[in-house]
Length: 290
Image: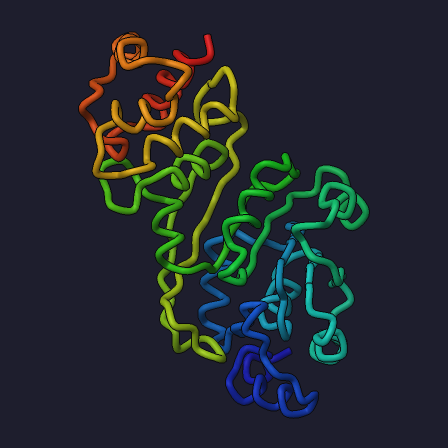
């Protein structure tokens, strides 16, 4: 399909919207991409090649799906909105290497569906323009499910992308940064203006590239305790680590016991959570679980 007929143009998008009388559902966070250059840059950042299997979430009208079909071996897309079925059947009719599953990805058995659609040991990458309202639950599920994915490259709200990729001693750094970077390396690879979407969202977007780690970034004795401690440490950002931990462990550890744990981990309790690296958080959490 030639570039001038690509789905990701304002004229093609408007034509299909009119043809099927489709109306955007705000509750589903539907913002369709209308710029092929942006899609090309996303595929480049994702490292999609002809031997790659691609997974997409929220194909919408098929703009990104089409480009994935052109540049990868095969595509599996999850779409929650059944109203898009006739449109996608039309826009993607020329491609035999696309499978669309009409299912909520948060409720789907991803391991099972991936096994059914791809060859064993096929290189798999997830590439998507995610609905903003479910960005964090979707990415968290993808990272925790131990799927056979090499990487995740997603267009998401810029503020959230910045938080996921943030490093210590920055405003954006917080418990979300650590939760994501525990499982993957994170990098913001592209900033995208509102003008490449229809309808235009109220916020700017960024493309976040996550590469799965073979092992978590740090060793922790108990993951749930580690994440709970991290979240509590950022509970009130302006307060010291000692104060936030005292609140978190109230009734379990007194202030002297918490101070002793901090000393054992080699951490000054007057520091704020945003100054601690993921390694320091792991050392501290392990003090409370051993």
